[in-house]
Amino acid sequence: MMAITVAIADDHPVVVSLLVQLFQADPSFHVEHCCNEGSALIESLARVPTDIVIVDYSMSRGDRPVDGFALLRKLREVAPEAGRVLFTMQRNPTVFAAAMRLGVAAIVSKEDEVAELLRACRYIQDGGACYLSPTVRTIVDQAGTVLRDNAPPLTQKELDVVRLFVSGHSLADIAKQLGRSVSTVSTQKYTAMRKLRADTNVHLIRYAYENGLI
Image 1 (spheres, helix red, strand yellow):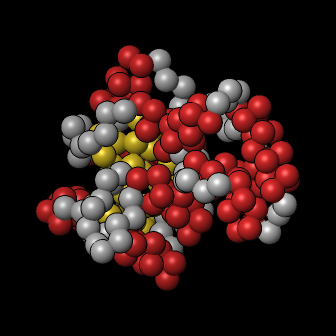
Image 2 (tube, rainbow, N blue to C red):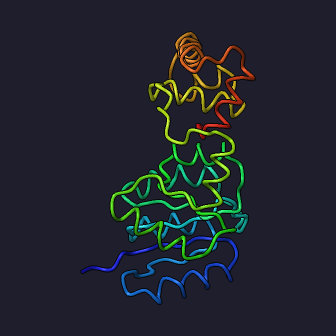
């Protein structure tokens, strides 16, 4: 039986070292990549894909740090077939929900036993799609958060407009970047807001941040 290949990324070297020891002690796993920066993880996976990717949510190392939702979006592009595990100190259920929408299959709190990572990886390899460690499960249950609801029914063109708009671009700038007319961009923004039930630009921006659209 082939070993399950794993990529590990955390901006604390001691954490990476401990996780490498954990997985190397289990013959059913093989550690393929160890990274302290999000950009290094992306580059490594582009060269050699793995079955599982374990990544921290907040990683500040590097000249141009890539972490949070930006990193999760890149992982979805670069390693779409990999099972993604978020290993984090985060306690925000909204972040958990957004991470799941971005393709994360398991969330493990750093407050839990490290063996939870092994359980999460095996769960994913067995076809599971929503593993929560005990601490994460408690946070989610207390908040009443739904992690796997339907994604916003936006078209790709509408998503492009929303992402650029909430990033601070004017409709004219967006039209120029996307090669569309200002009226078309305005219509797509309005349609997206209607679908998302966002009554104002503030509501649209808040929704985008809370749901990992940017």
